[in-house]
Image (cartoon, rainbow, N blue to C red):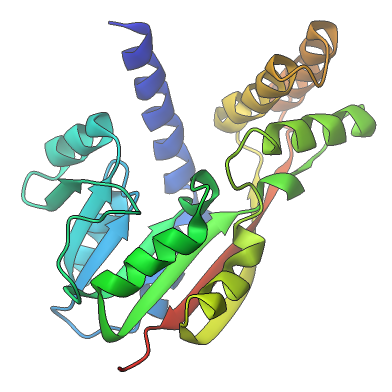
Length: 253
C-alpha cells in the first residue's frame, strides 16, 4: 500500500472515531433539524467524505446527494453506501443544476476554502428559492488543549491554524451568509470535548504541522507530543473545540 493510501486510511479511521462520538452525533442531528425540510426534499452534503451524513439524511426521508473533491473519499462512500448518490465535485462548481436542491449542508468544509464567498454564491445557485443552508465547522485558531506548557501550546495552535486556508471561517459564518444575501441567519455555538486516546493523532498532528512550519523546534515538538501521549495513556487528555452551526434561507426571488 502506498504512503498516500496509508494516509487516507488513517484519516478515514480518525474521522470514523470522531464522527461516532456522542457529541458529534448530536451535532449532526442538530444540523439536520435546522434544514427544516419536508420528507422527500433534495439535500446536498458538500464535502461528504465517507458519506455518513448522506446516509443519515436518507434515513430521515431526504433525497440526499453527497459531493466531495476527493476521488478516494467518493470511492469509500460508494463502497459503504452503494445505493446512495455520490458525485465528484467541489464547492465552487457543484455537479447540480440551478435550484436543484432544497437543502445545502457543509460540515468542516469552509475552513479549507480560500474563497468562502465564492462557495456561497454557488450554494445560492443550486438552492431553490426559500431553500435552507446549514454550515458546521470548528474554529482552528481557538483550540483549547490542556498541557504542561501553555505558552508552547498557544504557539502550536496558532501556527497550525496559519497553515489552514481559512482557519477562522466558522466565526465568520454569520457575516458571510449575510454578505451572500441569505436571510433568517442564525448561529449556534457548541463545544466538542475530546478525552478519548483515539484522538491523540490529531494533537500530535498539529504539533508536527507547527514544527514543519518553523514555529517550534523538533525538541519542542517531541516534548509537547510526549506530554500529550502521557496524558492520553493516563486518561488525562483534554481537547475542546469551539464549533459553530449557522443556518439561513435563500430569499424567494
